[in-house]
Image (spheres, rainbow, N blue to C red):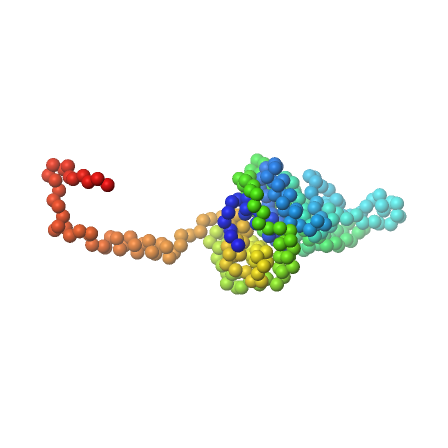
Length: 298
């Protein structure tokens, strides 16, 4: 696995890893509405099974439609309480698209975050007590209007943050739906050694990312990368890829200079200062008294 490549190829890695493991939560796509964003969404969708639910969150969605509740018309017709499934329950096992995430209210972001944490929706109102499974992947479309940002409570639960505006699509499709399906089958068997986890934590600390949630998501991303490569153990390249895609976009500071390199440079400087001159001073040619010196062709 390689963390290099163009911005677009990195965005494609994000879609592939999300397709392999929905527990990565999702992605915040920072990009203006346009063909590139639509293309990324279309390519992501082709990696998922055809029957995968795909729901777009309407602006200003009511709580009842989001979470479910009492179906008034059906209740009046049946003469008994009839529950209506909410959008998040309908999206179970699928994808929830959140347009204009930078304008998302806490009343919508909160239930989304809670569902990501618990994998279910709990509704207790209108004389109903409903509990339904709701495991989904979130794609936040953050257009960054007026420098606004999507709610932090939701963004921190999504493994990836992608700045898509600067990316330019290419024709390379390095993963297929069949490869994703195979990786999903093998994901549960993938292991990650403590040394690999320690490496991710060290990268996080070096970049000022102290969130344990980010480290957990990075470990999951590394396992998804290994599964996609047909392996049952996480390797160094998987860790590098996960750190690049999950931890680096959350960086709050630059890593300190490498101690070994700094020591080597310092030693080199000291050696230069203490080194004898290349020529014996007694053998040096006296300077031209007229100050002209001698020129040689190079």
